[in-house]
Length: 202
Image (cartoon, rainbow, N blue to C red; front, side):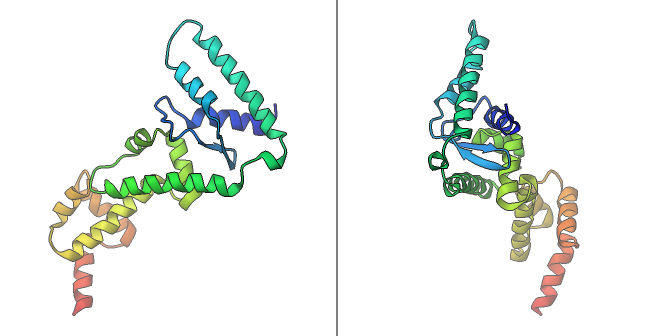
């Protein structure tokens, strides 16, 4: 078996976790590129059987794995005419990424965590990291933190809330952590940011 095929088999089972939903099945990372599986019944069957605990479960899973490997081999040597286009791959991944971003924006005022996002979209942590890396070359954790800090700037300029209230509303565990994160991104404290903008308005 080629190294590329090993990568394909690895990502098939690493990408989907035990809570995977049907809307996630059509999307699959393969090596440095992407592959779209249109007929995902084998994957769904493998995931389903892995959680049943019935007798001979391992034997059935081995049969499914064998068939998946054979189909991957067939796809490896198939004519390029039979392969889905890169635009289809990108479209599927862009759609999933947009849905994740929308979810983050909707919950930006909550103490949003990476495990929560993974559970909501039935993704492994590594799969989520890879989606963000391919889309914006940034980790999901950094993206969330940056969005919260951008929102905090808006709230500071509105002058409706204290720094403590903004920290609490954006789901930070403490005002100290919020101020530290703010300082790391903008190289000034939240209070200095407010003061500077007030001076600029004069």
